[in-house]
Length: 256
Image (cartoon, one colour):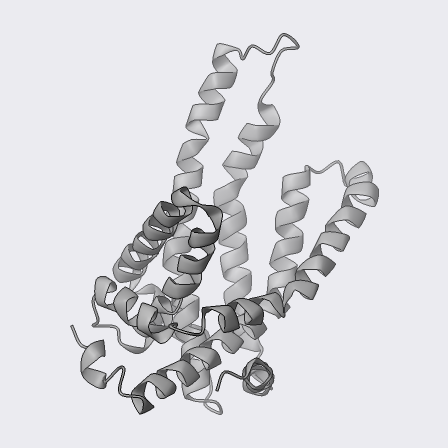
């Protein structure tokens, strides 16, 4: 039985006295995300569109060259996010064991498979999303456990991991969606903080709105990302046990 309150409670217990590595890990990813996004932010702030609606040649050049940092952002995050997933899965697998920053670095050494999995995930979610918004959301949930599958079974192929992920989430996509919605209050809080920042900090600091948003998101992630990621990792482990018990999946399905 899917019990989101249990998974969230377990996540809090798994984080007890183990916050150091998740915070360092999220901070690293946040800083790298900020640095990779900085050229795009600068590019957007420098775009000047005339009152007639025409775009100058130099402005068009800024817009087209701005695509490169965006692609770089996808590639970098495609390596780092699965590496974080590896650490969070390990925290659920060994609830009392010490987790170090080296575990995150170990996850990064799997960069090629991490990147392939991310690009494969993004490709299929976008294809379904092109049909309609709702199918895109459903498939994003159905494919999401594939990163945890790869974290636990590093030798599994990306395609097999996605297939296993679809089986794991059968009958539980709504449960996983509600689990995500249970964190929506924290995101609303982030939105309130950003609105306050726009009205009080921007005039004082003279910073751009995008930079403020990124900085707030990084600080916000230091708390909510570990909590949320561990909750989903616990849900994955429960779904896997359920599928093993019902014989819908066996260990052989995770090989190859």
